[in-house]
Length: 446
Image (cartoon, rainbow, N blue to C red; front, side):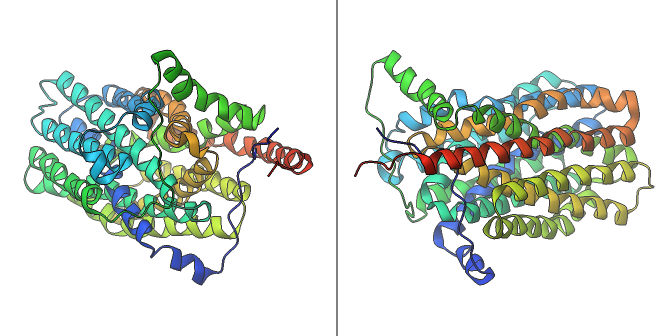
């Protein structure tokens, strides 16, 4: 009889110099580029798109409904087993399964972004919605492959650093897709902005094709099985494995993951309309996001990675919840102030520090929960849980703003972090109980 390790391993404590050195390893630098490629499409179907839609006279209620395009990210665990089991012809032999799927998804993202450049939101909102869903599906598929490669490419002690580098790249991609796209749209037009973003997807595509192989663990493709057995082992098996390893604590873990990012997800869809309604122009928004926002993001992501090397998961998670919730209040303040660049910069800088730090902490924690036998599927399950409630409620965010105004809306989103903070207490108790059970269990046979 064997005993599975039921609780995530805590990363070893390292000096600051050793922590910084981990960021310069080849696989960390490759992860940076993959993170950029994963982050680039995100704002182009959410915040950046919301600014375009608001400028075209689309109502806040309709803009909020575009949050539901993000359900492609939420339900990506449904097709994540495909990436674990199905080979990509030709490419897989050249670069491996994970990067082959990445390359295919990146080409799909580029193609759908190009399709969005031909949209006219003022006259055909349905076309915009359909293309937004297609971008989200391709981007979510890329995320599955990137997450699986990240977990398999690094040792357990490197996961915090790889998560931080992923966040670095991801946030840079987001900032380019917001700041860069806005500046281009202001200087030329929205069509050229989306075409330029489609071209930037080739950076990730080239890395997937030509980057040196740096995997620390070898991915072994599962054998071909009859359909029902394949369904059981590739879809049901990963979920049952998680429930078996964590028992009753699995419910607490999933509930916490589901509630962790609600404050950011719900408020995020209304920041673009807020900027437009306050009178900020696209170039001003873009410059602040790409300047002060970029530096703040880098700082936040770095702090998250270093924090995980210095303290255990529970206090780090509590810090992440508190930081991202509190910064939402800055947007309540911003909504009441005149449109001055300084005020916008303060809100963007503080929010980006908190967002980058919280994202790194959550990614590392979710990565620690996966079983190497079901990397893609289990991580997709966790990332789906953390997005589902926020995206659903976010769909109504425009109607909420219409009903209560921006100031009260952002204050309400700050309070949405309280349940997650409360669950950390129960999560900590469950983890201690699981660790005691593991230490009391008989040793595994040699």
